[in-house]
Length: 530
Image (cartoon, rainbow, N blue to C red; front, side, top):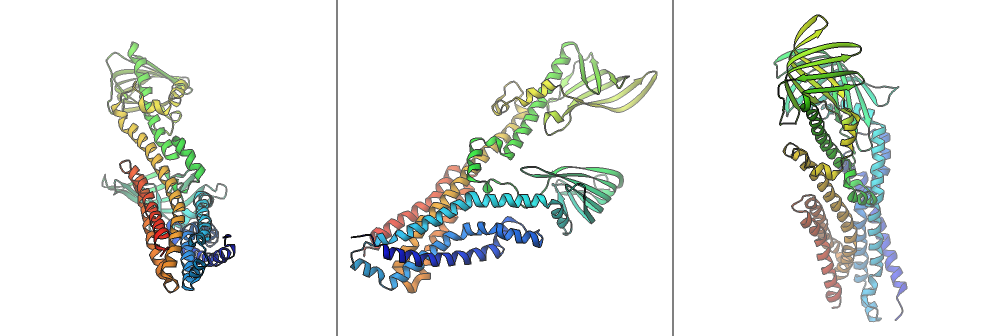
């Protein structure tokens, strides 16, 4: 018998009408009703930004509503045709009912393809646009947060409010605040709170994050630890991560980016940061080892850079501090040549420590002297504490550290293992967790798109079984397995992020689809034949 194209086109046309109307209604309700905006946490927007966000957020709402709209379209169309005895007529004409599911297959393909494209390409691009929007208006966002009762949060330690905030017209990355009140928190307790005359904040817009730093002037505050009021001329605000409402996350990467970071997880910024911290920790040990080797040969250590030259001598044996491998010497004499001026310093104790920096190139060697006497010509000045440096590291030491591969950083046997074991474990776990999250995200998107096939067919079959007067019943019954599949996918994604339940989570994601597919086969082969 010829393929029944006429009735196929009729079914597809009726089902498409219900699908399009349901998709428009559900997308409008979810997108414009605030659900998607609340999910992305974008409550701090101006009216102009809100207008731009509506166009950007609708694709995200559509990715969630298209499968449900396809479900409703299939259940409503096939239920009405069943109520009108159309399928009885088709069977009497010798038409196989299974052939009439071809429009459902086409609609499920369209819905699954749209959902796959939206979740893997359109939505990540939308979030990227949101990131650019936030970065472009970062000063305005900071001003809006200052107007809230909770104020502006700078990392974990500072909370700021201000009476006046001005974006520097010459520098859009700087905002000036006047008449400041601030709170500093130390381990979940208030450490200091007070006022300041002015605060300058600088924003550093990186590819993967926004960093904020600055300085306050004219401070007057109460120090709870010391139990007294203190006044300071100025105070530096260290570099902190700015809590952006839209951050770069794995779940918002395109499929191509997910596959790239899956093959090279060390390029993902969170993994890169952990390995940079490990590199700095290993580099510090390497520098301390080099200093120790240079001193141990003849009890003389010579350090120099473009600013000066330091020659340290000590006849007594020194030692390494177990905590970080730094060097401690006693009964030392240091000759300092700096700016054409020479000084001699004698001290009971000298500790060599590297200053902090994001990379080894930013670090320097600092020398802290205790119970020292500084001889400048004929003048001798006693000091309880004297600090020298920071002295720039030799370029060859920096190059040696930067040349270390990830494998060498994690498995170097030439360095003491115990002090670096925790840092190595953090780097390993960051890489492993990133891989698990990427695998979970890829499987989640694939499972969500593929589940549309089984669910739409199930909705159409149930529409036939329960007939027209029970269309909403069919929709409700078919929505129950839909909810179960979505919950299984979400739970599986969460479980897949943990090392102990990674495989179980992946199996859980696909188990719901398998169960629904089995139910589809049973209904199509057994129930509809009766």
